[in-house]
Length: 196
Image (tube, rainbow, N blue to C red; front, top):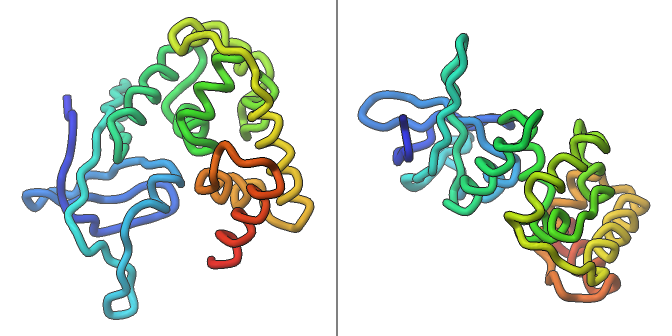
């Protein structure tokens, strides 16, 4: 099994990258969050990666496919593999779940049993969210709700009401001060969204 790949990105799409190492190109599925964190530089009118990139790899083998899923941080790989342990969650669903919020926020949602936060994810229904909470809550450690998830949902709805898509709003919220109140989060998110 492949555990990690280090090489140069020669192609980047909205769902995967191709990393070349030793004259072999590996197609690696990545989350939108990972794509946005890769360092890009303009060169001859095309986006190219300026540096060597290293991915932690989950190798998913099926009868008809051999798929690679890449993560920049090992904790993302660990969380992804925990999600795969939940019955009914496949690699594509796990990647979608990882792309909606930081791992800390997802851990908090699972630890507090907040299925409504998880159901906001495209393609994840109430039953699947409940399964995730039931199967992973003890592994994450049970937590008492401190209102921060509700605060984040209110901030998300406020940004959507200002005309931003759910994905744009979520991406911006990942970069704001997490412990701030809703007004500060909205201001910081608007600055981030305004710089795009």
